[in-house]
Length: 367
Ligand code: MRU
Image: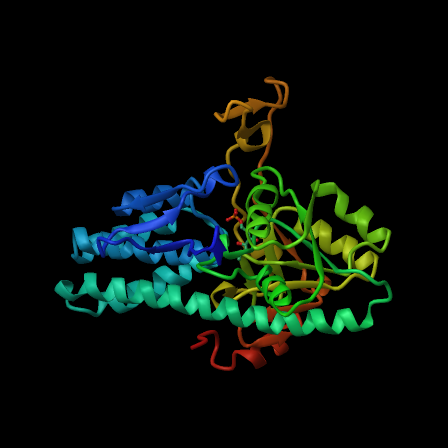
């Protein structure tokens, strides 16, 4: 995607050819700051503290983390330890496990002295694959947008509601839920995006909104509780979200609050779509509610908000009584029955086992 006329990716190999250059997403939308990750420990920290976040990007970053670990120490013990450290950074997004397992499997059978170069090659292949998948998701999603546009009774833009950030910052490029929006804009479609702020970390208000500003896509930020009201008043033509883990049966786990949007969409006859690459599908589970580990993060993200003060400094302020306790669940599961369609790089599936399996006959590998 372009930022101030320059093409940027959320992650890439730095000019030195071995360290990893990321965007420190904690600074957005106020500052575009790049950071260099030079070791396994730095990568693990960047993932767990959410300098990088979003399921596909977490997977690709972890792959580079393994490459950095192999650069420092290519023994079996170091490989096992790197897998353990990276795997423990964030529990819900299955792309992390998928990327780590894919690399580790290949590295275990390789001669230790080859491991570093194999890991870098695989990490870069994963990144390229993610870009291709996300662009294809955009193309397939656009066909759904076109169908809805033909049916809609009002004049004016196609009004799309999205939750959290499932844009290019959550992937390597393009995004998942935002990719069809970028394709629609490029095709000349008139769109307007309602952006859920997405408490507690506000990925919608800070990251999605920033992306849409950069791409000049018309949008309005709304508080998390507003979506139901907008849908009741016929102001939303479709909802589209990403996913951190989708079961083989089509249950969609995504940022906390997604389920409530799906309920409101079902109650108001608004199409509800999830956009995700194959690396987000967990073929080993069928019951999202019981089988997906839901990350619980520090209560401080609920009791405090962080932003830029008028003098330009970043500040964190308390918004709750200091005596109150808080719980901070990061994700929820939208049952398949509330998901209209699942948009993947392979095409569009219904949210059920048969339809997903039909798209991925050989059980999950896309390219
Ligand atoms: O906690 P985050 O910011 O990593 O959560 C991100 C989301 O929930 C996204 O919607 C999801 O990863 C899909 S992104 C392509």
